[in-house]
Length: 242
Image (cartoon, rainbow, N blue to C red; front, side, top):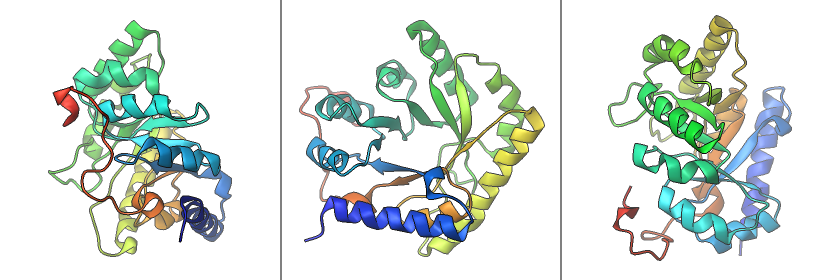
């Protein structure tokens, strides 16, 4: 029976192969194990296998799960962040992947200042202009970038995107190229380093690595398909549905 450690090894081999294809080192790519809906025991099993970076997308689930896992684990918040959850999640994670508007960035900066924090953030870009997705339209991000960089509590270190769902991984390549090109343009225009590109998930992370991803967010390929609603914290808090 295939174990989580077996799957982890397979994903790392794919990252290594894709890195070699692109003339990169696999050490340049951070694998983020997307643990949403999966129990703390599964996360702990992966920590024992040497995987230390995990991603959650629901604040209440993260708050319940993180204390149950070894302190060796490091956490990123990869979902859409609601204003009323900012104060809860900031102390728990080392990076926010989904800062998707100037308004949200201002809220995060203000609350971070009140908490004495300097969070690392990635700006989410809606690379395909999908109405169902969050994120800055590229032109809006170009207009807002100066205001974003003026938020001195935020450490803006790159971009994030989720391309349209596609049957073939290759269909995602053009969107990864667009995100990388936008990152390069902004870094040049504003004279700042934007080293991180968070792009690629279970179905297309190999392509993302070929196109410059420094972080890939892999869930089902690692943990397996979710059955039912998955793990949920025991809580009377009815705000879990985020």
